[in-house]
Amino acid sequence: MTKVYNRIENITGSVIAVNATGVKNEELAIVTTRFGKSLAQVTKIDGERVSLQVFAGGRGISTDDEVRFLGRTMRVAASESMLGRIFDGSGTARDAGPEIEENQVSIGGPSFNPARRIIPKNMIRTGIPMIDLFNTLVVSQKLPIFSSSGEPYNELLARIAMQAEVDIIVLGGMGLKYDDYLYFKETLEDGGALTRTVMFVHTASDPTVECLMVPDMSLAVAEEFAMKGKNVLVLLTDMTNFADAMKELAITQEQVPSNRGYPGDLYSQLASRYEKAVDIEGENGGSITILAVTTMPGDDVTHPVPDNTGYITEGQFYLKGGRIEPFGSLSRLKQQVNGTTRKDHRTLMDAMIKLYAAYKDTAEKKSMGFNMSAWDEKLLQYGALFEKQMMDLNINISLEDALDRGWEILATCFAKEETGIKTDLIAEFWPKGM
Image (cartoon, rainbow, N blue to C red; front, side):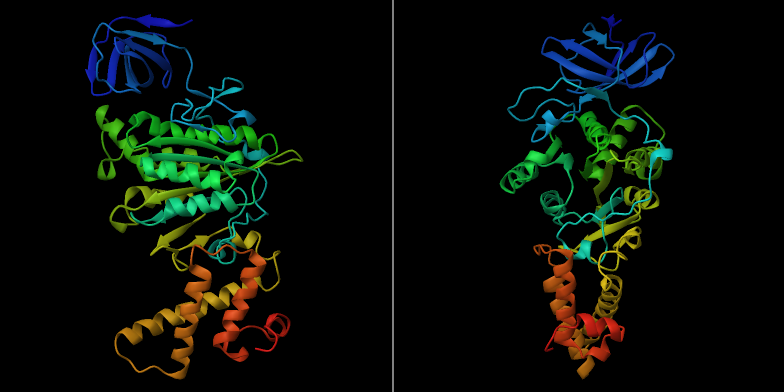
């Protein structure tokens, strides 16, 4: 039974307060003003005083406007009709298509039952050598992409969305510039990937509270597909915008701030989203894998958002200088799969990174004016080829082709005995005639 109130006790920005009974936290309401109707969500209950965040903002609301509680929390449609569609942070169609009403599910529920989870054992191929070869993405993994402002993280997510070998892509955008929203839409359309994609987009001009809904809506839809046997990749950008929206609402609600003004439950709020990653047991069990951009203000990895994220996730990708940085990046689950891809995978990966580290030392010596030895010249040649043929994010090749290319780069720059690789692997994989 819905409850209707016609007296608003307080209006502070986009937060209103009414005296009400029998209302639950996060319950939805409809606020009717002379300008129209807007959804609102309960964010705080203090006795009979109920605070609500109005999605459309507080502008135009008067104290005698109607507040009608709906008796339920936020829901989102979760069906195959959503594929190829774009929605906003409240679940309303942003494209020209019809609203979808079937199979409404609540958002923000608990993580999947741990008893039905299985140990990750399959890789997700992306066609990006710095991921597939050096820091393999594993089914049901949760990984952030740590990035400074200005790095092409949206372009990276779009490429992964087009190339990842999964059944369904769910893309959640938070605080996107309108140009970035159009970029995702047009890139996925042109690449033919939009038909297997569901997009939830919150732009910088949309209500702040909708930003908080995007991860929960994306993950609720992903769970429905995963329970139907689909392998789902959830791409989120940008979790720092999500945390900033949390901070903005916490300040409005006069919560006691924690580190740098963020709410004290920042860690648990992030963890409750990342922990939705799962590989479900059984023949018809699917999976949810999460890749989420986390921008680092001032390139500061100790900022509260990336700092807390690092304790939750299973590694990270560092995006720096337009490339995935090999030293800061880490996939803690790669050993679950890269022992079964090709027998030279682990050895080649280790050898190439070791030589690239030696190249970085040599490049630093050269910049300081040291004389270069013959070995140094080989390292400099190797570093240039490695960055051009492996680290460039425009490269799109299979894992097997990346492994073959790795051997070719080594053979171009070094003698066999200089690589430190086992003789039997060199005999099998070293390029013929080199």
